[in-house]
Image (cartoon, rainbow, N blue to C red):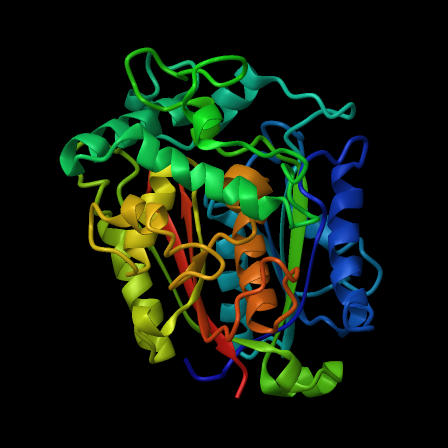
Length: 402
């Protein structure tokens, strides 16, 4: 990487329900709110990128870069909309970094959003199941009402069978994340707490999603509205923004890789692209997994919390669930993973998720996380954002600016 790129500012909405907020309002609010964090106007931003996944299917809106350009000060700038399913937010960050590396500007805004609920905050579960199903291989959708929970229920079954892992071990991941979300004011589920007994007991809302497969309601991430935005800058850009480097985090390593969309016929328990991208990000940053003690991984389902722990190099294949069960992923553990509450308890506004993972990790490294969640002596952070059935992978490694 020729030019170091820094995170100059981060802002997000509370995840959950955006009610009657329209997509144009969401986009403008995301840009202006993150600019206010460092007291600049959007005119200080040179380039931009926006990630979203359901903008066409649920919001009937395309050309989101044109909505960015409607924010006063953002007109006539190089901007684009990117889509990589649930990795759209991470892809937006990479898109901005690439523009900065090309010399198209010194400052950029990366944002992501999703509005998955209606103006009363209600959701149409069947419609959302169908719409998210578009991000899978056509042949693998047949006969599945809720495509992604079904596909990941199969991954969960295979993970448990291959490694001798129990439903209870995976459920502990969700319990830990709900415990973290309690202290994150932006988390969707910060008013809800669950015990391991509740996560395991089939009653009330907690039920098996697909007959004959182990995935339960509490193993799943949330249907979420929300937005998140980052301002990224080169050293020259930080000077223009008036932001001291000491107040910033460097995106020291980043990479992206895509595996085939079809799940069948490849090793989804050891996803080649995910490992390749993560290893490249570590290599670019000049760091190793042992150097990292903060992480956010893409736990769209509890099995991905376990697999993500393995991808970032904190556990051998098959040992990710045990890492959580042993307390190593706790705030005071060896590597604090998903202190935000993760997708399971913080929420999963698809396009915003990758941005929020990087933003929360930066807050941790700057010592700005809520006191109960703040990691003592944070050294470096890793993020792992996926799209589809462990198909697209965006990985970053962050460290304090030097």
